[in-house]
Each structure stands twice: as C-alpha cells, then as structure tokens.
Length: 143
Image (cartoon, rainbow, N blue to C red):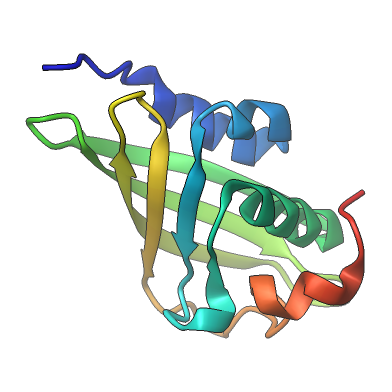
C-alpha cells in the first residue's frame, strides 16, 4: 500500500489562500477535476491547467479573498479527504460575502489530487454569476 503525504491537503489550501498557484499546481494531477458549487458543466474544470486558470482569474477579480480551513478529515485508506473551509470574498463594488464549504477531495497513488467536489451552505446572498470556469473562458490568461 502506498503511503500518501498528508501535507498535500494543507499545501493545496495554503496555496489557494495565498494565491500561490505554483504551490497549488504541485498538489494536482494533470487530470484533476473541480466540480463547483453549482454542480453543472459550466461550473466544472476538467483538467489541472483549466482549474489553475479559473481560480487565478476568480481570485484576481476580487477586491478581497481569503480561505481558511476549519477541519480536515482523511479516509482510512488515505484516498479521500474532506476539508471544511470558510471563504471570504468581496467582489468589486459588492459587500463582503462569507461562505462555508465542505470540499470532498480524491487522491491518486502519487499523492496528488484528482478531484475536488464542492458542497456549501447557502450564504445570505449568492456569489456573482461570473464565478464559474465557463464564464471566465473568454477573459484571456490570468494575471
């Protein structure tokens, strides 16, 4: 049985919080899939490069973004992770929005994430509609 380096989850979320895309990239398999909170094809990124482009664009558009991990749970076999997170965003011209998420993640033999599936509590108002990979595809490369 392969031993998984469990720091991968902390490194992933640290990279998201600090916008360190190289750190995030180092935790993802090339075939990584992100299924977003809207749970549809428009809110799904189907590979590492598309996900990194999407997350860099979204956070780059925010007047404020941070993400804190509250708790992490690992499956006994080390192949699944559940991370409870609180993400705070302030889209341009809008009030701050705090969102609570449960993120279900899958890990491959190499210790890299192959899947992120996001489940969340409904916040007092919905985040902007442009926070999907599909909506940002025509925005050009991330800054």
